[in-house]
Image (cartoon, rainbow, N blue to C red; front, side, top):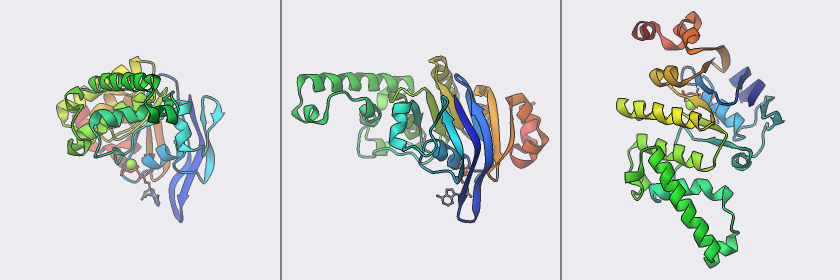
Length: 256
Ligand SMILES: Nc1ncnc2c1ncn2[C@@H]1O[C@H](COP(=O)(O)OP(=O)(O)OP(=O)(O)O)[C@@H](O)[C@H]1O
Ligand SMILES: [Mg+2]
């Protein structure tokens, strides 16, 4: 579904990505892991067109999407969340999810302004389905809360619900569990499984190894912009290079 072919990115003299090649198959959850500064967020930004790679290509469903504009993404079927959440702090939680529908909003802008019956109906439909998405991520009680007042972990979930509103086939998540406590992480694992059961494909950047190891079919490990390993969770857990570069010896003991 997604192919990265020898992708490289340099910021001035800094090599953020060096010749990265891997792919994500339809229906998979693939996690991208590695130490801080490894290039994980840069890679998501390259896939989504926020950053143009210095070299290499990105293919989505066999089409070259390298450097295509981010706003076209929702139309191509790719949704994402950001490591630093991009929410509208003054808007309610529900409204922040509704925003995710607007690329698909049918009535044109004048109808919207004139509040025609059709536009009103469509807006009501969006409101209802956004509420369903809030239920899906367990935030329906917070629907009317001003988003800026939410704790950090919940803001990440608002972003996930908003990304789902675009009905993506491929969802890219940058540290969605950051700020969640341990029972919230368990709930989030179930949310990811439900998203996958809905037929969606997920590329996940995450430091919470319990989450990563329990939901991923495959892992991709980056270090200093280079691909260190690709494999099944159990292979990666036992990979000496990955253990010394990222997981640490303590992880191996904890995992056994
Ligand atoms: N816009 C930019 N300009 C210059 N350097 C950048 C830019 N974005 C990222 N970098 C650098 O590229 C490298 C990779 O950063 P990136 O944010 O992709 O890492 P990461 O793997 O997501 O790390 P983390 O786990 O801390 O989020 C880092 O050295 C970072 O400082
Ligand atoms: Mg990052």
